[in-house]
Image 1 (cartoon, rainbow, N blue to C red):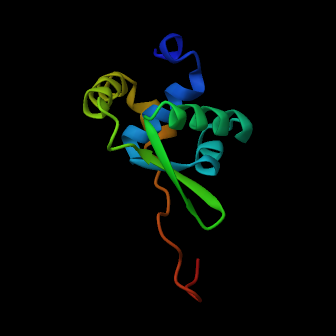
Image 2 (tube, rainbow, N blue to C red):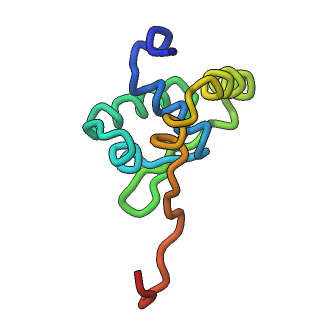
Length: 111
């Protein structure tokens, strides 16, 4: 849908994932989409250099989220949300709305 605009299908997937989840790690995206991590990291760096995303280091990982200082962030998110809403529910559930654990498991708690 937006791959022509962003010159990358990976960027499109990342933006849709960000709409659904608000933040992400590169390794999380690799597991979700089955894409080599190098391409994901390159796309995330590109989005960060453009000012759309910002990142912080958490432990050994870099966490990416929307840049609140980007001047057109609300309008940009509305555009991406509209495109995301047109995706089939099957694709949304498979790739973007997967239940993921957001915090560590209590020590000693059984799986």
